[in-house]
Length: 175
Image 1 (cartoon, helix red, strand yellow):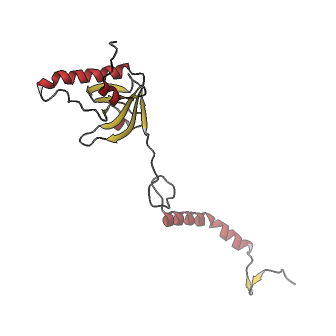
Image 2 (image 1 turned 180 degrees about the vertical axis):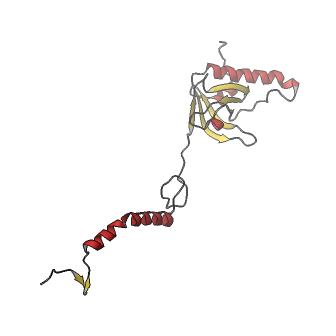
Image 3 (image 1 turned 90 degrees about the vertical axis):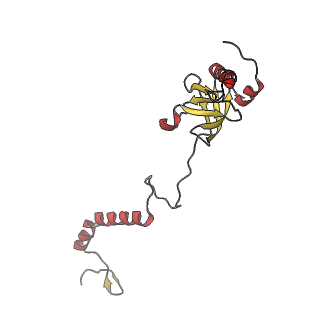
């Protein structure tokens, strides 16, 4: 009597050595085909991972920026605007960014009217002195400027809101 081979409803389901060798030689092609089919079926996003939601993942941005006076705080432009370096932001957008102090209005330098020049210079000097004497400067609640390229922010100097300091006009040391 011969060798017993498994059958399924009379069909030979056993693999001979010749058939097994033929299947294993095609495995790389089979794996490649399954991979290509998976990518085509599901698609992929720009980050290289599969994206089943159809939307970009949420992005997280800094809500506060801590600035070191002398390193991150630059030139004072007028009584309510200064330049700052924002760490963690691309240099194209984060270096020498004009920061406008929310809630403070001051005339631009040079003023449109010569009679405003003394008040404009006083406001500019006052802000410059406060920022030069600060130990730490913090920007909170940042927004993009409406009419120009600047950042509108609540600015805190040594823990105090700069808007209140400028409106309250506390005495300043003459260092």
